[in-house]
Length: 433
Image (cartoon, rainbow, N blue to C red; front, side, top):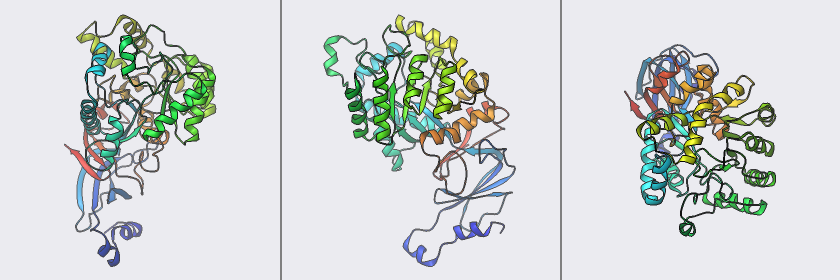
């Protein structure tokens, strides 16, 4: 037996503990190559020791499994941490006019079932943690808890509840609806003025959210001809960020226009989502605040695919913005990454397809990020942004056994991450091809 003394001590329980608890569940994984700490070089043949869903030790070479342990042979695979998507919408699949119809015809129960199905697709694609940035019905909040309790398969979810915006802003659910329907639509996520914005944050916190999402600018999918510029005043943005931070919640900011990006960063936002138009001041503010940029490049895939099926998928006011977004996507990442801005992986899945989250890697590389940096954005960087870096993001002793495996070396060809062969979350195998 070649395990270290530490490993042996961890694997062998005293008789008193055995009497008090069920027998330990020991799993041994033999990896062909192992990227245990993204950002560092991959290791060669390695052994992962897992006990009760947590990593006990990482050992060089293929060490024999102790009696009674489960051995998983991945000697012909490249093994790395479970991936993290920092920007998804699990309860949504549609876009454009179809999304509007879905919003007014589906029940909360239907949204919940859709979210559960999308969560499973996401997990099977190798994404073991996600941050869900937008849910008006509470479906993903409930799904978060069901997954954590082991009742349903899916990634661990960091949930924002409903995104907060100004009246007529990006997250206003009444946009393009007949005025006689407005009173029937929940608008507690809208705020105008300092006190109103503080109240809107507190309402989401009361729902039990993990993070606060706000929209300082208009959106591509907003059903209104209002451009993509700023839609909140400085005091409103500051009230939102300060209130969230008062409750120890990070703030993710939907922002396209540079004015809304810079206002959010100046107010202390923790991440900028989309960030389509960055300038030199944006870069300075990112670095000064230590905020993360989440590019969500994959949105263009969703737009292109929907338009290919139906050229009228989006109303004219939205279509103009969609075409603009397709044309400029990636330019801000090409500016931010070499300047040293911290990047976290996020797709905006729901606009793009669930289960195809790894398409984002190819776009990140296309627009200037090395494959190894893109992987780091989807592991250690995203884990830090989401506040779960003590548990996930790397394969180190004490962390959750969130592990995936692929054929081929993703640090050389990031597209191999589109075909994940093995998925383990919290020590439980969900996929093994």
